[in-house]
Length: 334
Image 1: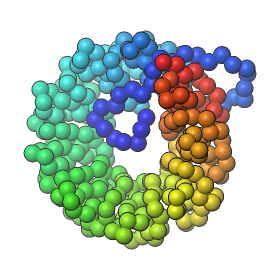
Image 2: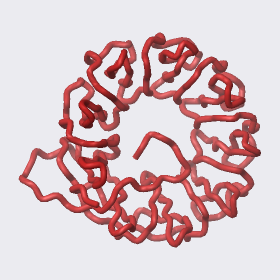
Image 3: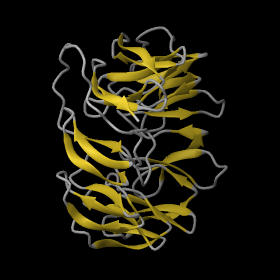
């Protein structure tokens, strides 16, 4: 459950067991979701209430937010539906997330896309391929990145050494490894000329960028600054707030640049489900959008909330899930 977008998503959790504790305040109702767990090396799925949906019989399970879920069994990847029934039998070396009816796969060392019936939708002819975003899939040809449409036709020629996925109509790209970063539009033209040492995707109308003086700010889609550079680091906006580093400490700012509190955190990460992981004295907890500590500092590592639950560990080895009140939904175990 990290922020990094990759073709394959491996499980961070080990065996899950149900917590037995004194009755506590009820968390808000959680949306239906599926959460991966491990038991005796194998991976399975549980729901947001701690009920096993799919017994652990897989080697790995990919992202679980779609109707079809990538799973690996006996060294090959296929796709199951949300009840655990195979819709596409395992036969691929790698497989990613379905978006727009397409999922990236790797077949005999080449990448392409399959449709929801398991038929090849885009021939496996690329060095690498990412899941689609906004109707375009990033593909690699001879170590250069471009994009294809849903039919596999090149929409943007592969001429970039580095790209991120499209978000809000623009994508981060650089032509050569040592070039500055800019943003291209769906035609492949520069919408924002390369000018940045680092840049994240657009989110909530702005993008966090690192300028050539190594400070961070936020730009609009026309390249003008929405929040002037001056931060030592910054993450993308979510839930109306962005984590920023001011000096040695972190806080959050809104779209007007107003802080929700003084810089006080050793580390801070983006919001999700109204809570954000923050670190103090080498332990992680969660704050709400008012800056109040919602879940006390007690975790060696704490991931972002997804569907009302977050994976956390108190010892760095055993992982479990908590709800937004910090109550164990699944107790940590190895």
